[in-house]
Figure 1 (cartoon, rainbow, N blue to C red):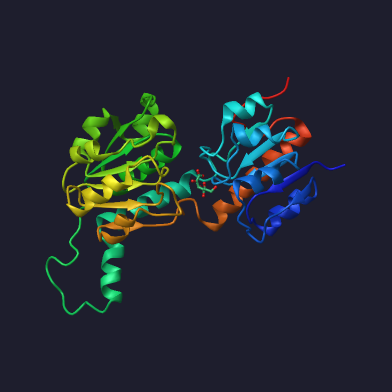
Figure 2 (cartoon, rainbow, N blue to C red):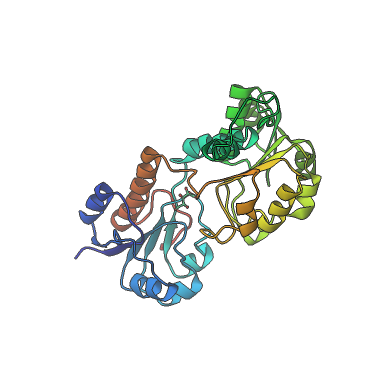
Length: 324
Ligand code: 8YV
């Protein structure tokens, strides 16, 4: 008998077809919204699951799912998982690193440029029919080339953004991270290690790429925003909760920083109402990894993780070790 797996959200038909060759698959192509209780009840009927970043697998859920053996997250971030609890329950956890690095770095840079050069604000102005004539200061923004790029969180995506900034735009790159990169990687990224305070004080553009955890909650709050230059921009492609969105809306309204670009939000898909009414913010709905090719690669890697676990006993990109 084939193992039973559940795919929590809609996914490419091609990937479902691959999965069906190995598993008895419950899909959710209709994109039914499950409550926590109904998700838990569904999961309890299956041996494995393919989840996205919004499907929780925590101690409470796991308690109801003694049959569950593997969960593959179609995301590099895994703050929807309690990995320690999964290990304790003997459940293999996996994510999809690497396949989305360059696409996400592209988007981080796109958001930086849109923010600095006021792309969406000026487009809305044009669409409202308010463009009557040229003016010297019309939507004059912040320089990108040759400016100082500060990257908070220097994993693979942070390094991708650093390379784009240093090599493509002649930016001076500074970074802060829990651990310092090797001298070789620092040279490759042309990036200089600084303290968080120094980064906030001297960067023209601050990009956040730190993983979310209780320890990184509100890494950027009112105090940190106050340390930034009034001309600086802030980009968050990491996770909602890394930034205190209410404090950021205040800083944007009072122009204590120039602008922000946000792809992730506290409590998304809800967006703090104050962020919706300030003009100097570019807002996108968590799409940093959303190119067709990359989403396909993520879905296939998540599928491969399940196939590998159930045929070989280990996921390809595991987050924990289970079994013997
Ligand atoms: C996903 C992401 O789109 O990989 C991540 O961590 O944030 C995004 O690439 C999202 O989490 C859906 O699973």
